[in-house]
Amino acid sequence: MLALRKRVEGLIAILRLLVVLRKVSGFSLRYTRLPDGSTKALLLRAINRSRSVLPLRSTLRVLQLSSSRYHAWNREAECGLDDMPSCPRSLPQQLTRAEVKTIEDMVTSDEFRHVPTGRLALLAQRLGKVFASATTWYKLVRLYKWRRPRLRVHPPKPKEGIRATRPNETWHVDTTLIRLLDGQRAYLHAVIDHYSRRILGWKVSSMFDPSVTAEILLNAASELVAGKPSVVVDGGAENFNSAVDNLVDSGLLQRLLAQTDISFSNSLIESWWRALKQQWLYMNTLDTLSRLETLVRFYVTEHNTRLPHSAFEGQTPNEMYFGTGDHIPDQLAAAKKVARQSRIKANRATTCPTCEPPKPIVT
Image (tube, rainbow, N blue to C red; front, side, top):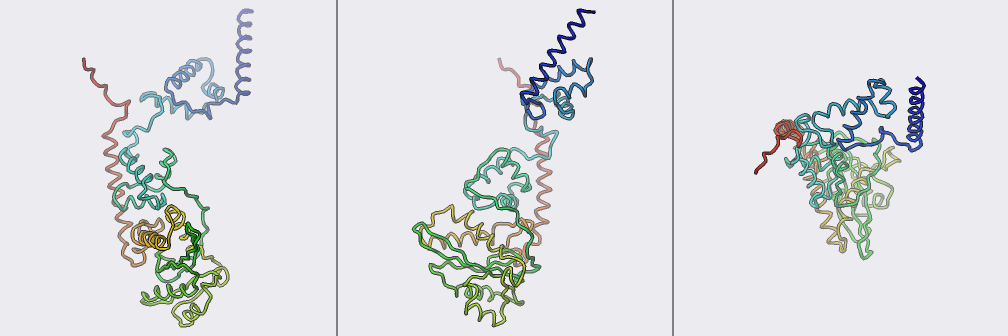
């Protein structure tokens, strides 16, 4: 009895030292990843051996190991404990390797460097390449640390602003300054339709000419069939001058001063300026005025005719403006369903390395 009591006291002393050492070092399995399967198996054997003396809950509390993680390791023991991608047979909804490769190629391609990741996911659906949500694209970019061929600063989430219910109900017009490599100033004027996000008119000039605003507004208004657009402007001189005043007095359109006549700002056109500059212009050599005009013309064409907008369920600004893309959401939804079924079929026919039959040994 004395010998056993002495031995128990020695074990208690060792256990006390180990507990103190764990607390001082800050080590905890709760925040530690164990990718090696042999390490997990060794820990599981130790836990199972201790269950004859200690309850499972007490054992897991000592190890700082959650019960869900312990039971998950027990379930994975049949297929191997080494960390690896999910088995395609057990999770057939996951993307195939070919789809992941296609997403990587599009994310890292120079051809689509001017397209934001969320809109790139919709563009891939329009091109019939990959049918996956924008959330999945963001997840894969973070997981594999793919780098887009550009530097982009994510702006804060905007607040809900003015809303339009039909094309040509509300327009936004503004002028922005762009500096060329030699320091020369260039002024870009543009008007955008709020409902469809379509660029209705734009012009690049080497000098600040306030009358250009009236010119592009008049050109945009020449396509009107009916209605009187409300043009949201800021307090700049390009929006308050005799040329624009005459256009407003003619009754062709109504001018609204942002944050004065209405409580909303002119942020929609400012958002498009940011996209144009950060995602396209500043990634090219702006050496001449003609070069700048060519780049702006390309991006406006891409924006209006090719790039689907996430707010329009895959429709482009032109399709929203002219009402020709009503079938696109249903078409994409049907194509997603077909792609999902094809993905399940492909994954169920694929085996992971653990499930593959052993290769015959050739002697």
